[in-house]
Amino acid sequence: MSAAIVVDTMIASAWLGVRGTARRTRWEPLLVKSIWVLPFTVVAEMRFGAEVAGWGARRRGVLDRLVASSKVMPPLVEVTDAYVDLRTWCVHNGHGLGAKDHEADRWAAAVALAAKLPLASEDTIFDGVAQLKRADPAT
Image 1 (cartoon, rainbow, N blue to C red):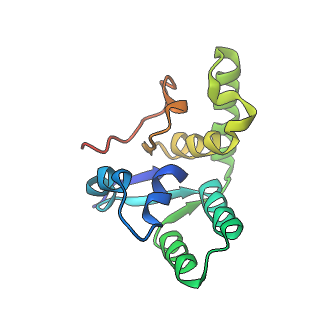
Image 2: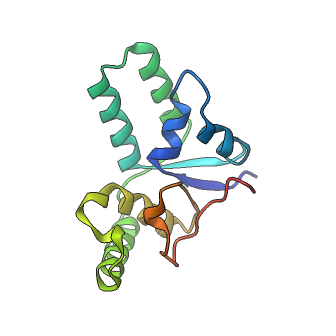
């Protein structure tokens, strides 16, 4: 059975372009065999980006198919509890993930923590969050 991995916006958006990217090339061996879990905030960020950029039907279709083929995690009680615990830890420990501009990143991390799944991300804001398991594209 395939392993599930929480995928952040930075990684998921690499699957939306017409051409392959270095990021997609790095992550594809791991993610092609994984079950994608997309936090609700990742879906919202990608749909917002498409709307602002004025994407046409073809590109929106790529996004819609990516979302449909993934498990979208809503803000369940377990997720909101993990969010509160994580943000509290960040504030008490002076970690940058506690800053206001990392709201969507905290939700992605909270989904990973609540589901006890690794997070696929290249964002260094997650460095130093010991309780967060990170996916490694080299495995």
